[in-house]
Image (cartoon, rainbow, N blue to C red; front, side, top):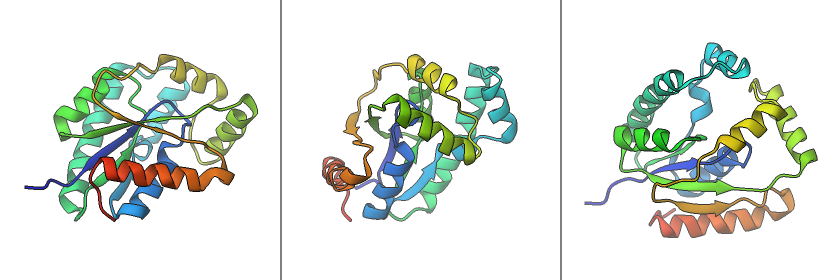
Length: 178
């Protein structure tokens, strides 16, 4: 029996998980879900004040797992989710609640001015991230010990065709047909 894919695009902040998730959904017919949207304004406040802890993370991940399972049951083709999952226990928790999941680590390298532009854009979208918190979250990102694929994001609008090629390669690796 062929099961529908459940793909988790994870990685440090600002590597392009959401952008890639939307492109992958468009190319494949999968249902896209941005894990950032699960955060309440109260939770965003805790993050911005540096009061975000593992208890808060587990509460958020529990809600996220319920949403992922609901989307999966309603989706004809499967789901693709973008979410940071900075710590290994968070990846294992979601895999236990929603698995089996296909994990894809999204990587990118940002120059300082690109980082500042991105943080500014995200801030205007209501995201509490600052350059300082971005660097903190990035430094806390644990190398994945869970089986995963990797997708390198060129993060350059002039190289969008390269990114689309990489998304199509990923679809082949995951046996997803468009």
